[in-house]
Amino acid sequence: MSLGPYPERSWSLSKHKEFVECRRKYFFSTFEQWGGWELAAPERKQRAYRLKKLFSFHAYLGRIIHDEIAAALRKSAFSIEESLSRVRKRLINAFNDSLNKQTRWEMDPKSIVMFQEVYYEREKWNKQAADSQINELENKARTCLQNFAVSNSFKRLQRENCEIVEIEEGFPSFQLDGLKIFSVVDLLFRKSDGSMWIIDWKTGKPNEDYEERQLKIYSMYVQQQHNIALEEIYCTDEFLLEGESVGYSFTEEDISIEKQRIRFSNKKMEELLADVKLNKPKDMSDFPKRSDGHCQFCSFREICLSDSSRSSITPEARSKEQNETTANSKTRIISRLPPGINRIIVDSPLRDEYGTPYDELEEQFLWKERMAEMDSEMLTDEEDY
Ligand code: SF4
Image (cartoon, rainbow, N blue to C red; front, side):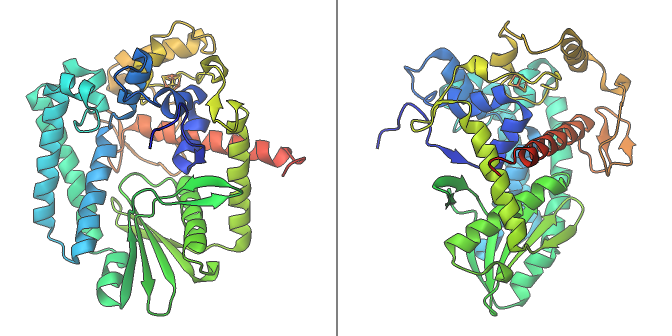
């Protein structure tokens, strides 16, 4: 089956996250990269496609840990040391790819791992720096995998009579008013009393708003796909870094509000389409760049920041961005701490007590603010909602 000139219209929470973070990033990630795998595609499309395939260290580690957990669940057996040895091997291979196989990655970004941190600051990465980063990631993996082994959800699966229904199935989706909503559940199992349990393994810092929304969307999926009442659906976030579980069950009202948020988000996305039926976007210039200069984690900055038409960014924000790229992290000024973060370990780079770089926490905080802005916009848009 040949793919069309525009991607299929769909919605997911991660897409929404990009949309609220930066409209231009959403444009690159959704439209500009589309078709960039074709050798005959325009150069910027090919670059957007490649840049979308970059992995941050922590995203890659999260991917590997999810793979290890999925394998353990499928086999009903788990050995931490064997698992860690595979994790270390994959990290070493990924660093080797990132440091030594850029040309091959450019040809085949789906098969070769390229770390975003290495791609954008190649000069920083010698063998010693890579070894130290691998050790740090391995320590994080050890904590996560140890906590997985003793987690309530894994123990429940082993102790009780549970039937595994799904473990990260391909590209599961459900429909909301004819719109395809993607929703990949980490683990779904059925207990002997017929109740369904959704488990989400979290390898990063908790971000309650996002996680709760994600679980509501998973609940919608399970409700529709498995034809089960909402009262029979239970959700758990397993925070593997902290070793904590948080359980949720949602009411019809919770789900109804979440559906409104999806409809509103989709409406805002549709406003940026030239042809809704084709899912053809308006011109790139209709997707503004973020104006606060917090671009240091964006994988598309190579094609975005080289563009001289940075009309929406203020000189102050640009200067801030330049300073952040070049300053020694020890000298950065902490202007505010995200809610719930009460301690920062001052080393290089700045991190919280879980080892999350401070910049990532601030980005998470900014994202929450934007989500809240969109919610209040939705509430004032009473005509439709
Ligand atoms: S570099 Fe900044 S402005 Fe450009 S797409 Fe990324 S986040 Fe948006």
